[in-house]
Length: 187
Ligand code: PRP
Image 1 (cartoon, helix red, strand yellow):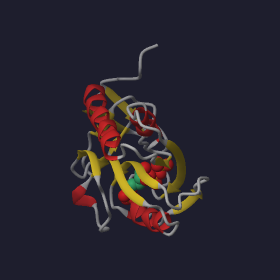
Image 2 (cartoon, rainbow, N blue to C red):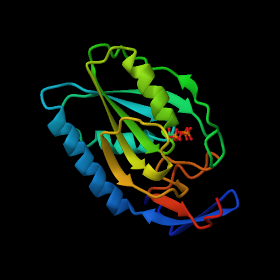
Image 3 (cartoon, rainbow, N blue to C red):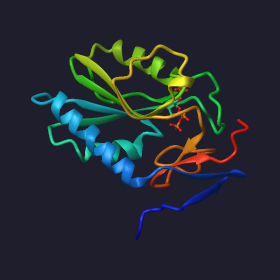
């Protein structure tokens, strides 16, 4: 069964077109995995995925990591079912792992305003990790209002509404195997 790779996608009354292809994602994610192998050689990092959006990126990324590593998850929500952040982070699941003294790599699908990462880095650093780095597949630098630490970015993108590859609109579209951009720029 082939991956879900339509040329266009309709969702909640909006139309979307391909923005970052599967081939581009595959190549960049392999590079990011190799970065982890190099930066953490001799260590045993814990990859902390931020649910829901990061689950597909994390799954693909982790399969390029060839050093010993672990995984755990936070679940946050700031967008609800809207295209614009509610401005308030809701924590829905804490980490299970004890990260004191551990090398933590926070894995995000997208940093938009930076609100979620600002909140999360404070929570993580309070737990006394040996180190914290942030890897995000997408970053919208023009939209970022919080001065957050970002160590590795897959793709910098303009302030456009994107979905697919874990990112949703009203909870739909996460199953698309590449990244799509909205056709209407009225937002
Ligand atoms: C999205 C995304 C990031 C956050 C980025 O999550 O996965 O966690 O928004 O936006 P920000 O930089 O403005 O905080 P969302 O709250 O939509 O939840 P989801 O991951 O379950 O889709």
